[in-house]
Image (cartoon, rainbow, N blue to C red; front, side, top):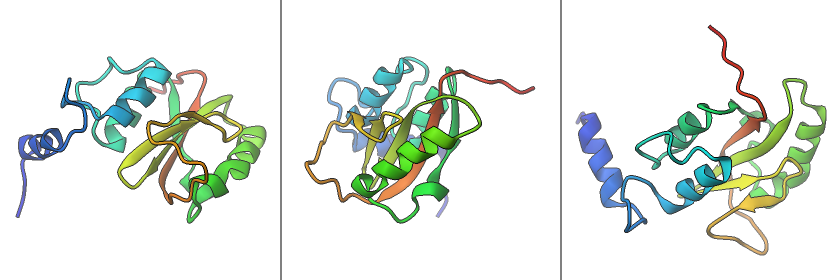
Length: 139
């Protein structure tokens, strides 16, 4: 069965955890606020929505290959190493998606924004994006 874009958005809106604005989930909204891009898109339900919003002000690139198969806690040292050795630019943080949730970390891997914090974070990473300080447009 094929769903229309409206049907998909209606599905996300019906399952939103934000009673004030069901167009934006709370965890994605808090990460977007921390990056200063919460106003850039109408919807913040999926990782694609959040990355699209972030790309209006920053360069955002996947770094999943660096942390594939790791938990959030297990990836912290790896993220710090990636930040120290990355040649693309200055990383200001990482957008990390785990099942049903999104987190923003600092370049050294410490948590910056997490609406569901854990003492020992064993949640498996499904997406990881580096956020660079400057937006670089290529036309």
